[in-house]
Image (tube, rainbow, N blue to C red; front, side, top):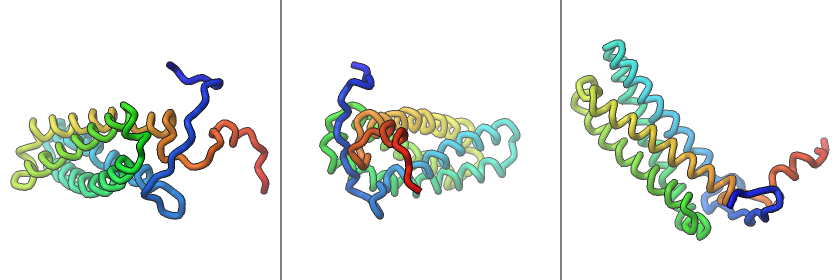
Length: 170
């Protein structure tokens, strides 16, 4: 059933991995998402231009995306295992499984480039980069549903729309 203004929102659940009250998982996921999806762009530029510099950029982007992805994986895994609500929702399982598969495929993409950064790009590296990008889109959407619809990792009891309508004190 679609959520309306009259639909009671679930109470927020706090993140188990937080620094100064701020959940870490949402703060670190941007790095692997940006790095791994940019690798698709540099793979496409290598295919288009043939310049080996683009393949080299892809290698480093995938390496950095994988390393930061491990941090996102660990913080997300702890949150997933400690949040019953995340495990009870389809969005939680989709986010957990799809983003893990994307990270796993990134290992293969990286491994294929260790011996030959340029030769593997066309076409297995390009295909893996495209698959990872698609998986991150699906997983990111599911993660957004966890936060905005199911209020996993959200602090405070007030809906955001109520906070926006309250006068601020300066």
